[in-house]
Image (spheres, rainbow, N blue to C red):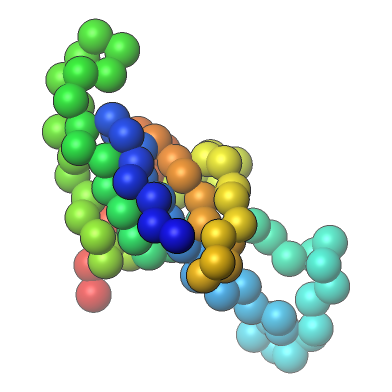
Length: 95
């Protein structure tokens, strides 16, 4: 199944969560933080949103940082994805 986001929406796939800390401590389910880095897998066309022109700044394949509690999660055949607004994206990660 593929998604075609509307307006200023972006579909992202979260990066894998670390199971251990840098010092080797194994994290339980409650201790893991929600990831804030993801890869863009689909981008809406932009357009007029809430009376303002929105130009999409991200593209498919970009790695991004986004607000911790942003978006809505869905389960697809390929695994979980999150749909967020472009305004919830804090930065594009440049290697």
